[in-house]
Image (tube, rainbow, N blue to C red; front, top):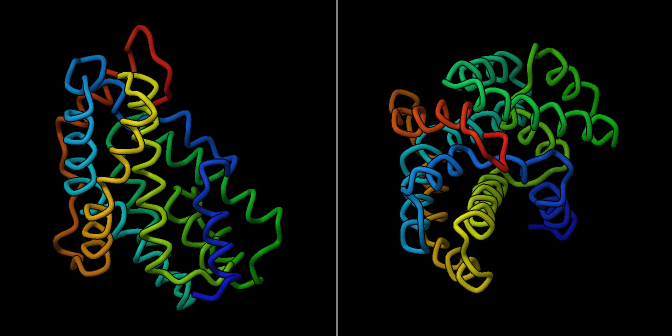
Length: 226
């Protein structure tokens, strides 16, 4: 990868990017509240299961398709996968999360004027912009290789999940870093699945996670918005 693309990737995947990812746990806070995640071992098990059964089976493959659609300037494909991703958000919190972060990243990318008119028109034609669509748009505009973008976004997701565990289980900083380091082969495997999974095998079927998300909506005490 050229140094310019690599630096752009660092910026796009950085947790310091002001899109509010730190304020969401994606159901993990409810799992902690219910005692499903209570130590380093259970935290790793939760993250690995969510990675392979949810993120690698649906969210990352859709990001991969959106990256290809923007790169090929295929407006119909961008609209198709954007709509399908939003339709698959099965709780109010999960839907609000992706729309808020997608809006924030889209606005940032537009304000920075990183895209040509054709790419910009494709983004602005969408009624709502979820996070994968915004990431794909920014990645293509910044000339980031698609495979690197998928891997970076998976790492960013995992890092955020680990940070939730560090703060809320709680785990120590060393345990958090050890956990994140141990996820490297899992993230690489998830990235390979995301790039090869056929359309008919995409699935976000995770009823337990959906129920936890719905419980979180009425959870008495919480730090996160999902």
